[in-house]
Length: 144
Figure 1 (cartoon, rainbow, N blue to C red):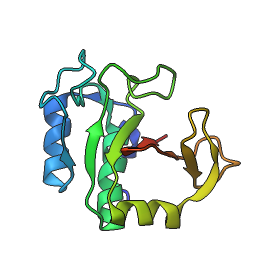
Figure 2: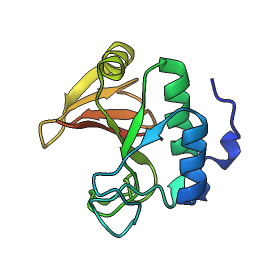
Figure 3: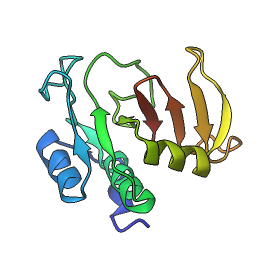
Figure 4: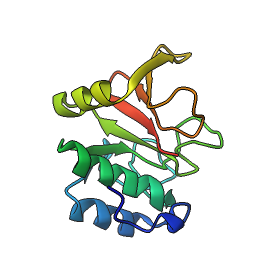
């Protein structure tokens, strides 16, 4: 499925470029605050997102055939850490029937996170695998 330059996966890209790539691939992004300021938690920013994270989101859209809407990116307000939103590794994706079915069919239930979110994982023994957290309003997705 990868039709992008995987050697550039860790490259950080700007919001305008990221939003344009998503739009071209049919992936929507929306913000509850109708803004993209990375310093505001109610905005949805793609500023300094990893190119690999963005392209994995696009691969998901193409591979699943499901509508995909990004509702969270690199904006402040998410938990910190090495593999965090702020470090460009994670996106929040809106729930929809198609995507929910795709995730639960494609990934295996792994365990519950500390906040109670169900975690899905392709290969629980592989620490480099993607992790999907089923939060009340969205999927919190770690693309490694």
